[in-house]
Image (cartoon, rainbow over all chains, first blue to last red; front, side, top):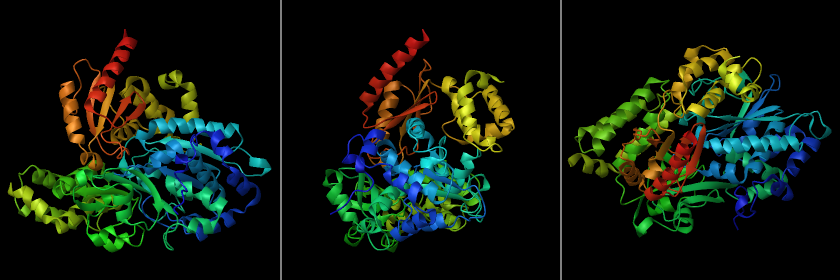
Length: 416
Length: 170
């Protein structure tokens, strides 16, 4: 039986109201943690749970928290609510409908690393959500859940909301920090890592919304319960964002290790017009294209199995392509996305995405010749491993895998 | 006290209070959002106010305003109609929806209607891929999602919205 850890609002209506959340046990874990638990013990529990970051990289959360040095203060926690990967819409559902569980997770992580000020960075398009969070935080202050000297202890916590202004790259954690500090959202050179010199040059934990929303469940119900879902190396559930050419797109919270087939044909009810499935992009626009073979469909969606197919699980934004889609058109779209969102800091990405977009545009307009396909491949290959951050590296995934696995689609466009 | 501080004393104070004393530069982005509330764009005058409050150069402020896509440095339509045509939307007919809107409004993406009310724009993924077609409206500093659209539904919404904006103006 599959458990629900995150999308609990689907079972408890009104969970985005504070009174409903507290009536269902909300913030008890938080109060218990501050009053009775040692920060180091909480970090150990999160380590034992095996929770891995849900923003894309899958890095062990507890380990991330433990990296913060105890001789540099203050510490900060930053929640990454800059959900912008094409095909990803899970954090938005949490923020709108189960916001307090996320906030409780953020508060517990703040206590675990002894941060007294924590920030939530929302993408600019989430302006309405941001406004509601400002009200919710005020409500939590009024009820005494956050503020000075909480529950008779010496621990104080303040939460702050920051609204971005439209830039995909700000989901990259160091670009996000730059943006909070009032700069262009461009990634920083590492080291130093944010754990040592992050926000305002202080030790900082940056976690995704979905990651933090797991924390109250792990602490209240225990590591064994959390690990009852998912696989040994990828424990817990994950919200899979299903979109593209399926009958029932949407968010599906399922145990990690669920197969593509179950997601697409079980929950998604199959392909539009019962057409033939062609390819899967498991990590949004940043994804390599996986040809939808029987073997691929039976692959478990977890952090170990998807790489075996030559792709990544990423944020689990599963975009489905069917036989009606020409892969060259698809690649043109993803390449234009990255060209638009390249921050301009490094030459391979700034120039590479620009030139790739010119080539793919020529191809889809039928103005290209056959050597252009290899030219596209050549530009992508020259970018590979040379970009400053992951955005540039992500931008070549679809073109390279597209040409390798669906070359006929490109040839069909140039021969016209 | 400059005109932004005079107009929004409480908002400016609360924005500055979010950040450590020596990190007021961080207030640039929230203050730019505030300046966009009324005019729907950021004038040079407004950038100067933000520079003064955060003790940064106007060049720094202008670079931020120019970098982020939701900041606009010149006036356009009161309602910015921003249609997502990114990957997941493209797969479910966003281009056709955009073309219908374009025909209905008599303008191309990037253009503004003659009455100055509506600017039609194409935008990248807005995190609503399961409710395509989708657009977001940007009016001043307010951004709202409109999901599961048809061009008819959108044009109807625009008509009633335009009427209420015209009403306010008269």
